[in-house]
Amino acid sequence: MAETPETALTDFALDDVTTDFRGVVRETASRLKSGNLGSLPAVFAIIALVAIFGAVSPSSFLSTLNFANLLEQAASVIVIAMAVSFTLLLGEIDLAAGFTAGVAAAVLATRLQEWPLVPSIIVAALVALALGSFTGFMVAKVGIPSFVVTLANVLLFQGILLLLVRDGGSVRIENELVKDLVGGNMSPTLSWIFLGLALLLFALTMLRQQRASHGAIPMSLVAFKLAATATVSVGVTILLNRNRAFPNAPAPIQGIPSVIPVVLVLLIGLTFLLSRTRYGRHLYAVGGNAEAARRAGINITRIRLSAFAICGLFAGIGGAFLASRVNSVDPNTGANDTLLLAVGAAVIGGTSLFGGQGRMLNAVLGGFVLALIPNGLTLVGKQDVPALGEIDFGSSGTKFICAGLALLVASSVDALSRKRSL
Image 1 (cartoon, helix red, strand yellow):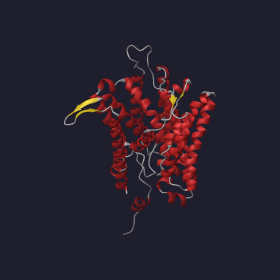
Image 2: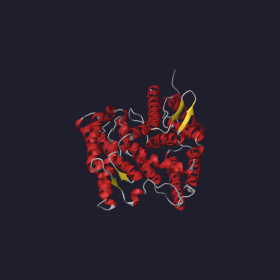
Image 3: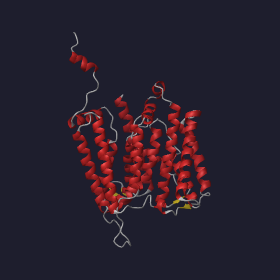
Image 4: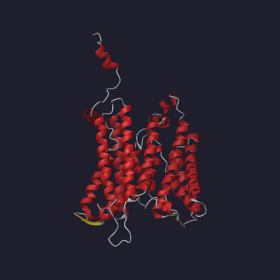
């Protein structure tokens, strides 16, 4: 049978362009059915955890004070998860990212005792970058598997941290700007100004993308996203601008936590790097299929080395968050479960352990999930459970079990969805 122009167009035309909101919904449903769940499990997990903890302990968990504390608790995990995401996108891992954060925090704290703020920050950032570059060199140039290199670096970097804080001591941070990084708050007026600028930037970005898509992104979808974002943002700002201090507190506590705009700037910058630059496209290509990327002319060695270097740099920034939260640095800064929570945050948020799939937003969503678990369990405390008796949900053992189960579930979803999409 001879082909008509219509059948030829169907066979060889580009993908159909989505032109309306209903088409976007159908396309999203089709993508979910194929196993590409993205951040949806993390969103459902956040909704479920808030509903459960809110029902069990409404007066404490749903308070404005706890909401602000939750944002501050999640910040350091989110930033280190963003750092680890660069290696996960390659199908690699950096087990020493937590101690990279600790070493950078120790360098910052010790330098602040003698130097001004800016030189101290620069030196700490350079140290973090050097540690990440060292890891990248051993993986990309020498060819040692990342698991082995970073496992050795756990001991190496921990030793450096112990030397910096003098074997079991601690270094206090007195600089007010660093102390207020996590724990400080913007004034209510400044909070509204920040919200207005953020929404304006978001609206301009969405409109620019809509124009560049030539109709592939419907204006109705843009309007829906803008309305939803503005509604949620305004509601959150109203809550945070209320006084959340205890009745007998000497001063009110109001405004958006200072850490929020910092994390937002990092999120925007790293999202732009991954989605709007050639480097980001090359990173995804190498993570998706390294051999195909090599044949396409991508310098795989340089991409791998740079990914570990970036991971080290932003892990160092996460270290500053860790130090700011407790106003000091000790041998446990970046140790214990810091790395596990960071990797877990990225994976729970939707970043694939197999490489080539993930976004910076995944780290943010996953960080909230892993911050909600210990936060909510602590407030639930001891409860009588039918057939099990009294259980202390605030104990460390219970928190570790719940966080581990959450990571196992997320990893299972990732593996099963990847099989389904093949």
